[in-house]
Image (cartoon, rainbow over all chains, first blue to last red; front, side, top):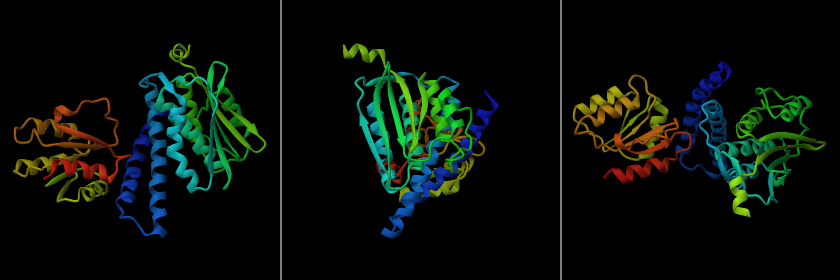
Length: 228
Length: 115
């Protein structure tokens, strides 16, 4: 096991326990009055998001063991799940979440949990970097022999060095992203590791008014048989 | 009586509160086993796996080895992923993930197994 990843695993386990306690404490409060209820909701939401990232770090360790099976996955269904999970968070932070599906091929070869995490992390990243009263976009379309899932934000453009890493399809480690303050790039690091495991291409496109992150998922051959 | 065994006392108290019934909290498996040996048989046990001292699996093995405790319903409450394991042989009636469980999940088990 590589030492760096092992360190991540230990840290992940250490972080999970207090986050789980924080969430349970918030849940155990009786419903607060309307002025304070949002604090309780936010405590639950923040701890759940942090735990999801911690769980993703644990999964990175498990990638080495090859425990995640690849199977035909309905990409729109995964996107719908993520949308349901994040819709209220976007609304709460005064961001819109726009979705458009234009892909013909519905099944890709992937691991459902990992694909869910990739899209979830892209969208969280987009929410973080989109300004108030702007929107993030989730687009699913066919792209050559793949299905491309794109998450577009309207925040500051991605720094060139991070873009280069994304172009390579592999972020070596979480790094502080200048111009995108407040992020360690952890979500993108997780997304790139999971994408690589699934033999999917991951990348980013810089815009003058934001960034698009994408993952190209290979179309399932099983799906092709169904569609003939 | 309900037993909650968790070395994280704050988490144990949250679980106990969700039970809405008389509970006894233990920070380790040894104290819980001692109480059971003295004749206090709980209606249900909420059990963490990673404990100080003997872990949850050691406790489960101890329980199923005695006729008077083999049938106590156990709910595992852990942040470990145990989805690949069949724990029913230990009398485990449910597994709750600490990172996603809700108070009503605990209450549901109490309602089902406690008179």
